[in-house]
Amino acid sequence: MTTTIEKSLNDFQIEKFQKALVSWFHQEKRDLPWRRTEDPFRIWVSEIMLQQTRVDTVIPYYERFIDKFPTLHDFANAKEDEILKAWEGLGYYSRVRNLQTAVREVAEKYNGNVPEDPKQFQSLKGVGPYTAGAVMSIAFRKPEPAVDGNVMRVFSRVFSIEEDIAKPKTRKTFEGLVREVIDHEDPSGFNQGIMELGALICTPQSPSCLLCPVRDYCKGFHEGKEKILPIKNTKKSSTKKKWMSALVLTNDGQIVVQKRPETGLLASMWQFPMIEKGKNGDLDAFRSWLKEELNLEIEHMEPLTTVKHVFSHVEWEIDAYVVKGSISSVELPYQIMTEKQMSEYAFPVPFQKMWKAFKETH
DNA sequence: AACACGGGGCT
DNA sequence: AGCCCAGTGTT
Image 1 (cartoon, chains in turn red, orange, blue):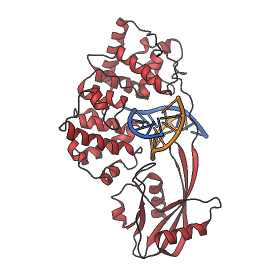
Image 2 (cartoon, rainbow, N blue to C red):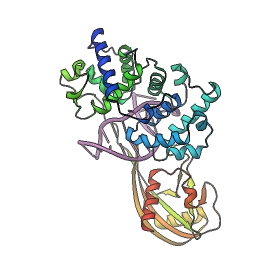
Image 3 (cartoon, rainbow, N blue to C red):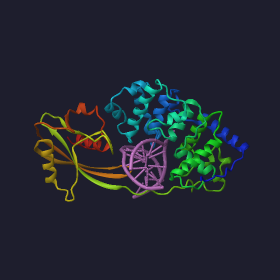
Image 4 (cartoon, chains in turn green, brown, red):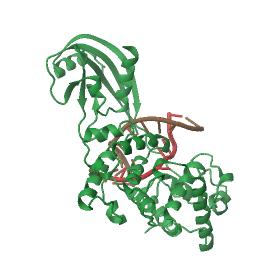
């Protein structure tokens, strides 16, 4: 039993709404790098990068990524450390691993051609209902819905829908609505137009209704509800976790690093040796842990900085130290490398903050 | 349905 | 201190 949304527009008005939106889009759209290509692989890459990530953040990553992996096959053949490095700082790192899994499947199963069938494409790793609709409509002009946060916000206003957009089933409601009103002449312009409108005009706070090309068709505006829509419930707050970490420098100027586990938070990325801080925050316990864990003879140890980092669901506080000493040998997952070697591996932002503090003080 | 999964920009 | 961002996978 799905909720039925009463459309506030008749067929005639829907057509005018489509034309107003699509022509506004083609006139006002931003010149973005992924709008200069028709290569399904590149459009796909851009959509994965844009998940939960702002356009301005994505642009430089996209440029570097396409420069490094110009074709689907270049990316399919790359090493994991290499693709993680290309994604370093962008967040949600499973996106890039899933993308490679999917691209390899396309290379083998579809002879390197991105499937044009929405169901086949959506079956690929990391491709959900939004990304499937976006790539199918933009690259292949298929009239498929691509419902993201923008679409739910814009449509909740245009059709004055007060369902909670945080609920999973609400997305399906909007998909059904998009299927009814999408422009079959230009599905790409329609989907991108809604998203562009959400980014430039129909913004989360204080939408610019006076500049809106579809204001005349907006039920929420006519009811004066544009500011209270969309309805979205609040999510729970994040937990906190404290750590102690050391930048260990060997006598010949190398650095001790560690590869994180291949599952979970920041999977397979690199960091400096780190343990969870005990309840007493015992520095001596940390020293003896370093000694045993790394076969390390500590010659000097000093506090460096405290790094705070907020993830979506957890907050970290890292007490960072600089340690100098001699090491006979380290065992996996630890490794000793030069600064130049470090630059080839992906480090999460909290550890980049540590490194930056070190470079500024030493 | 609820939660894990990054990082940054804006109010 | 929240909210939001061109969401998806797992449980």
